[in-house]
Image 1 (cartoon, rainbow, N blue to C red):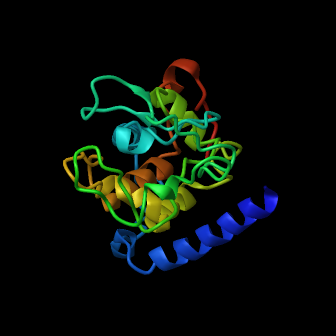
Image 2: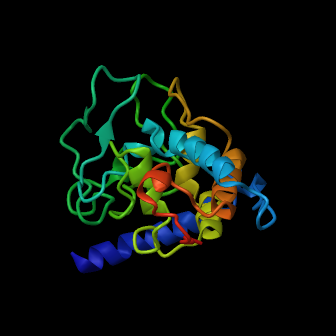
Image 3: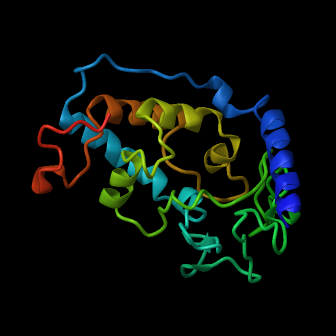
Length: 217
C-alpha cells in the first residue's frame, strides 16, 4: 500500500507541474499593503469576505477535517449530505485505498446536471488540518492564523498558495450551473494580504482580548 501511495503522490506532483503551466493563478499578483496602513476594522472587513469564500460549498465541501468523506451541500442539493455512492477518500485523501477520486473527477468539468466536476490536477480532499466544513468565522480565522494548524504559513504564504495551487482555482470556475465562490481570485488574495497586514484579527478578539498586545504575524 505504501508503494501505491508513493506512486500516486509522484503522479500528483507531475500533474501539479503540468497544471501550473495554464492556470488563472498566472494572472494574479501578491499585493502587500504598507505596514501600518490597514486598521483592525479594515482587517476584519477583509476577513469577513475571506470567510464568505472559505465557507462556500465550493471550498468547504472538501475541507472536512479528519473525515474521509467529502460532503454535498449548497443550492444544488435539497439537503446537506455525504458524497453519494459511498465515496471514501481514505487516509490518502484521494481514494488510493478504495476508488481514486480521479476515476470520476477527471481533467475537465462535466457540464451535465450533477456531473462530476474536474480540474487539471489530482482531485482530492484538503489536508486534515484544514477543517472548515460547518465551522464558524471565528474558528476558521483562528485556524488560519495559527502556524500549527495552517501548514506553518505566514499570511503572505497563504495568499501565494492560493495563487499557485491549481485545484483551488476550480472554485472560481466550477462549470455547469454550479455557483462559483464570491469575488475573484485576485480579490481573495488581496483580502488575505489586507487581513495579514492588519495583524490577522479575528471577530472574537475584542471580546476575548486575544489580540491585546499580541501579534499573529
